[in-house]
Image 1 (cartoon, rainbow, N blue to C red):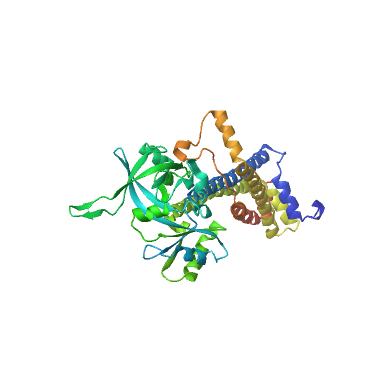
Image 2: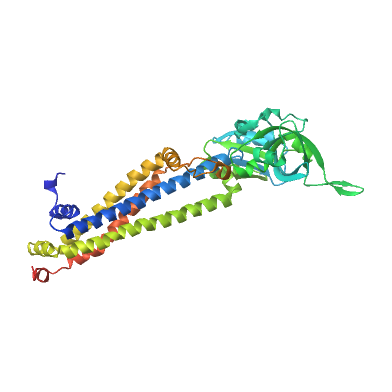
Length: 420
């Protein structure tokens, strides 16, 4: 639609949006409008960037956790699954399940030269484990296949190996949680294991508190007749809760299916709460910038009272006067939102380039790898977040125009023109 076909409300509203040249007061009002527009843009861009970085951190941590953790665990209430192959076969009938592997999980104490550390000891079958995890690709020393049945070998997390001061070929002593009953009383049940590998998942909790041994060695050490359960890998990790729910009904018996989000429910609940609070706090910044439009439009209404009076005498209705100033404020909000969305998306998509440039320019490092595990700032832009943020900014800007526009509609022509 061409400018000639626009209604007079749009024409006047667009005219008021542009910088006035007739007086310094007009220029000042336009300057305030630009400040309001810039405030909205900065608020929108900041919210998009912060949420993208938080999404990136969440995705990075989740992916590192799932390099060790399974998507779904199937276990029996009794603590063991006698026929794990049958359970795995039944689970793999589900269209979303890509692979299954048995496991033994138990707590143990690792001892070496007086240093003791508690750790989660996981028994696995090296040939089956790649079906459900990528731990084989996380090896820093040795190979997953070095876990030989009956050899009592062990693979440690990199931080755990450092804490125990052990390397490849050295031995550590494992203490089972349940002691051995003898005539002299209960004594700890100990077994020497040879370190044949070191892995780094990139998640401190696992790198400092997890170790792998062969499944059969784990069953002997913990005196289990069968594996603890079966670990499953599915096509889409985000569908794990739904798939686990379906498997819990199809597998039947006393089998229980637990997905990865249930195993780390406290962490993901905390992340969700933090993300929600950041969204609310940064939305308030947009609200403050949007409601700066109120003062801008009030000043404009005061300045344009004579113009409003002339329009009223020419037949413009109060509703038309309201439309003029709502269009003016709405355009400022819309332009500010568009500018914020564009700049926020550009920064969020290129943060892996922008942040290193700033670090080199200032000679600082924002993320210390020894503390944060990762040294680069991750970003994961979600377009639904972008549309939601843009929509909120436009709505807030529109709401900010209602009162000044209503006040403009109430201007009485005779009083406005009395001293003109």
